[in-house]
Length: 173
Image 1: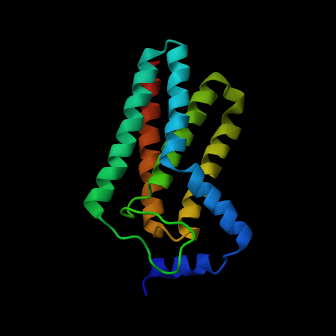
Image 2: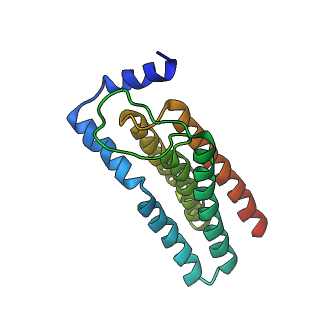
């Protein structure tokens, strides 16, 4: 048995009904329609404010994030773990975790945009973004639908995309 399987089995050893509910909720809130709705709300906010460059950038970034995650999944074709009967079903390839990547990018960028207008809120916004992404990523492990390196790669990809986007946003200002 490899180290990643051992980590997942250790996490699974903590299985409990209330944790099932907690992490199934993370799965549902990390699904594509929820993330598209969040990004769409930000996009519409910029459109309403007539910040066309920022709206266009958000649209492009959202599309690029989904394409990158799908591209890596297509290249890697890593099968999902099959270590215990799952309480949710998740299709497709395992690497990288789209939930982890998209939450790391999206939540960080939403925190950045809020902090841009309310600097005193920055610490709380970034803490909330990190907590949300951590919850989604750990949920992928608890639910047994990703290997630990899938989640780590997703977080790294999302963080890199957020860092590049923040740099680009600052250059636009």
